[in-house]
Length: 602
Image (tube, rainbow, N blue to C red; front, side):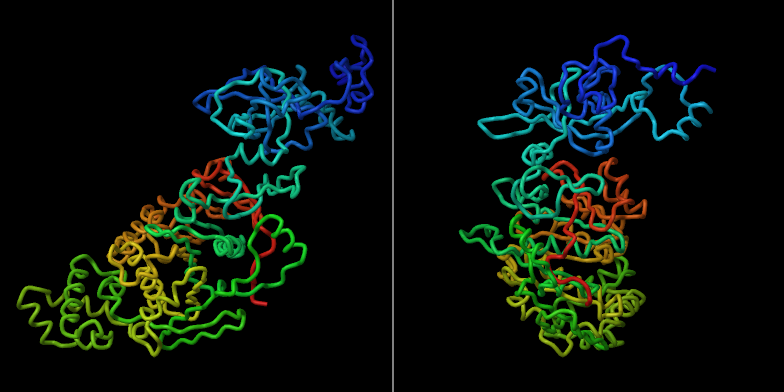
């Protein structure tokens, strides 16, 4: 067998002496003209074709990466390829039209016809200090994203409609404006995090060097995405509560207001947060924020610090008590009046009533309302159901079969600890509960019974949604105030199921999601089980923020592009994928490592 050097011996006999720069880059003895320093990371190659197609599967765009740049090239990084007829030559490659693209694959291809999978090659490589990179071509596959061009001094983007020429120099995108324009990231809006690739924050030569990712937040650029709904999905320990607090705090920034439809006024939004783990009332407090961090927030226009107008509205449920020492927010007790059930019978329907039984419950509630009026209590209703004469009368009249009556009675029992407790009814506290620029947190951690917890959350959520959608609202305050309805562990309440209660809940929230833009109502759903969120609600979500998820069904359910989906199981705490088609290209971002409000039990 011949020596390996037979096909790797570049002795320079066929060319002139190379420049000192080329010697330093490993090209001793090679003729690389013109002499001087290289620029860019490599050049486009047409060895396998050079094609941009309407069908992205047929697109073929590959670049040869030179030896000195190979260690810095990563999948997901953004590159620029100038079009030579507008680039103006080597000295002005950033001028005119250029193709903005991302690296989707990296490959070593054999440079010379030789078999490197042999014992001799392997053992020689094992004994050497490293491979000879010149023996291999390093090829990057590029996915075109957009064409960038100048229009009246403004940088704009359009769909990819031109193919660049072979051997065009490819360079890394390092200009903040080019990257944000290429990815269609708004310049202003609600801050989510900083653009990253593979967990590494993208840095530029600008100050600050990071690229902020923001959601559109004014009607001039389209509907604010807060009213087109957000889903945050992440597993335990992924940082979803930390990240959610940071995002929600931005909605309460001092200067953030939204116009009120049919009025000349604007108002700050109100955040109502259903909190099963008792964590969000901490948004009242500052926490320990380093000076360097606060200065950075001020430079980048990121709202930080506790929000003074934060109140914990604590549901009074029999047999429970709420005591919180981990936050300084005001605590106000309330109760759910039974009168709220008249318009939402499914609140006491439970998960097992069928349609026939639900109709019977509705009829019985109407009868009870006729006899006791709006002030009738839950205890009075159960006494009403205990009357044997009522069951007999309804059965003989063919109104409610006695078996159906018994089924309704069994299901409607067990809510005595929820309704009409010794506290002020929430219906009398609406102006305190919903207030522009305020945060109303509803903790449910102290409620151990899941039935009672569900009844409390759905009663309040239904009141807010019903008033927002009503053409004749009882509470004008809810109707006129921009509202963000936050729900942690949303999969527990918005699960698609065959029960009457589930269908009623899903129907209500689906309609709320559809009307959100018009009514200034935004859903902010947080879950570790996105696959359990009902499809009809999920389809209305415009912005999906995905942190680390380990479950395959959960990853599949969030419906993000495959190239980002594959990264989800490996993301570190705080890494996120943002899929918001009406805001930007799908991207990876890094959330703030420090929570802008207090976070944690210390």
